[in-house]
Image 1 (cartoon, rainbow, N blue to C red):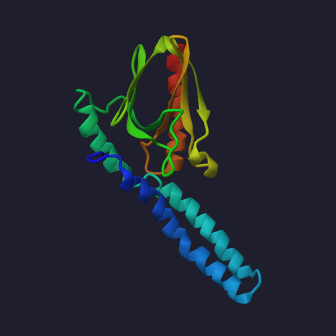
Image 2 (cartoon, rainbow, N blue to C red; image 1 turned 180 degrees about the horizontal axis):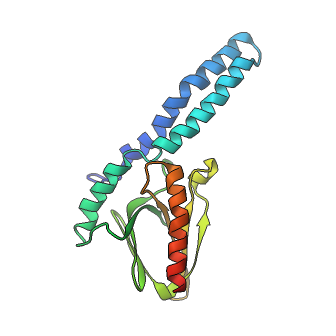
Image 3 (cartoon, one colour; image 1 turned 90 degrees about the horizontal axis):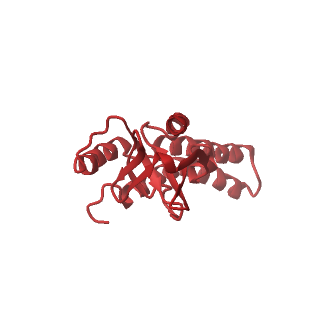
Length: 196
């Protein structure tokens, strides 16, 4: 873990900042109702406001330090591989077996759509999937989907008779909603590439 660009600090901050943004509203609303020994309009409004502020904060800060992470991955991973970021999409990546308590993304890197293969180059993982092996591309839910803020672009393939799934979520934009829209374009691009 030491020396990694995508570490626990960034994962914690993407969760703590939204919690700290919503906490005062929820706390004051709850305390007002506890003190009054009943559900009050002001208390309910403050608790609802806490949820709205939390949702907005997750959208804005969920990918904490994203621009810096992109530059560092570009410098550390792509430069070492002799590539630049042009033509690539900065993404969060996870294997289907990965379960992350702090973040849906297991790794960060770049996805390249080449003539005959898809290539993911990340800090921890490097994956290549031949075009002939790709059978489809679809959306799959991840933890961001619970809030309507994101989802996986799932590249479904068969390699040597076994099903393979490459899960990526764009991280090109500053917000989760911006990246959700970017995911729609990425899925369409991969589907058109697969059919060409």
